Length: 103
Image (cartoon, rainbow, N blue to C red; front, side, top):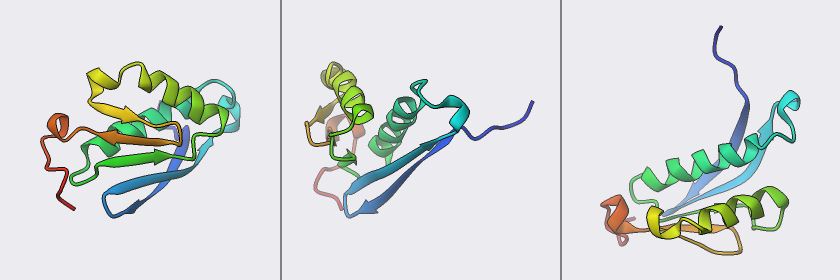
């Protein structure tokens, strides 16, 4: 039926890190968990960007961020990611195949 935009994740790059600072979801989908899915997609994208070694999802203080980080933390080993309580997700160079020292 055509493409539909469900929402956006706004982020910026600073050196070897990506910072997500805002999400927006279509009002008709509000409260249905789409922001968590979008943030997971953002982290998956960030983990594959050359020379990005970490990404931040807010400050880890709001409900969406806490839910996302707690779910990801359960799979840190499989993903090769390390999750901190303050919103940072660090990516394993071994899983990425990129030197962590590259910037």
